[in-house]
Image (cartoon, rainbow, N blue to C red; front, side, top):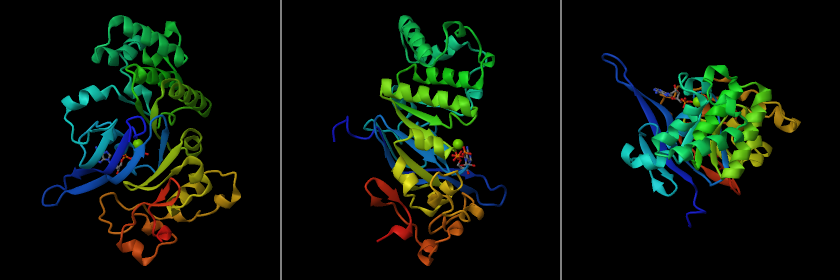
Length: 325
Ligand SMILES: Nc1ncnc2c1ncn2[C@@H]1O[C@H](COP(=O)(O)OP(=O)(O)OP(=O)(O)O)[C@@H](O)[C@H]1O
Ligand SMILES: [Mg+2]
């Protein structure tokens, strides 16, 4: 495959387990935050990632950026294997992958001006002064901020404006890949649409690839080309955005969709009852399907054997025994 057509990000059997100390006389337990995830993100696409709180979305996104050491598995970025890369080996790749987080207030240093915040990543990566200046002005305009904002501090802005500053800062070093970890969740609905528009315009203009983590299923449908659904550290379904909403396959996906207002009444009450059960602990050793304790369709095989991903329609994958042929 040529470099242009190969996926920008390719993840295989990725695991990130946190080892918790069990205390005196007790064996430590492992939180399996990400537990064997495989998927690709194509150049120029937005891959949406959804799932309940604690299912491992942020851990997966941060693992791809190698913000910490992973437990096992492969991560390829632009053709390079980075799962085991050292910090020194990662340095030249760092500017090619950036992140925008949910709370721009805690991710922006309150003691720095907007100008300093946008320029800092460029200083770290050795951009010349004039280049920093031109790039700052370009991005300021793109995110809809004004020149007079440059000398102000983060606390002088609204949440939406702070997220605009985070976007400009993340894009200053010309990344190809941007992890957007719930960048809209702290914003008012009216402001969410503005920030989405900025992200989409910039994606088109700069050819960016996004991994977009979201709680809001209607927003993620709107902006994603493909969507992955996570449950307890695993991907249970991956599909083109429209296919996921029109023909959700995995009982967990159907239950998630049932919880959001749907224009299509056939989807609305599909699996309303299923999400009542408790989510098993992420430290539990589950031999079969992780969802089976809450699944209305669970069969004996689901308790004992873990289903693997199977393609059920072009580009539509799910890990569920109901779809095994
Ligand atoms: N540093 C850590 N040490 C121990 N456990 C952790 C750590 N970070 C995350 N976890 C655990 O890993 C699991 C996945 O967490 P993660 O933050 O990735 O979930 P998430 O899907 O992003 O949730 P949310 O939607 O609330 O942001 C959770 O059980 C969490 O408690
Ligand atoms: Mg998270």
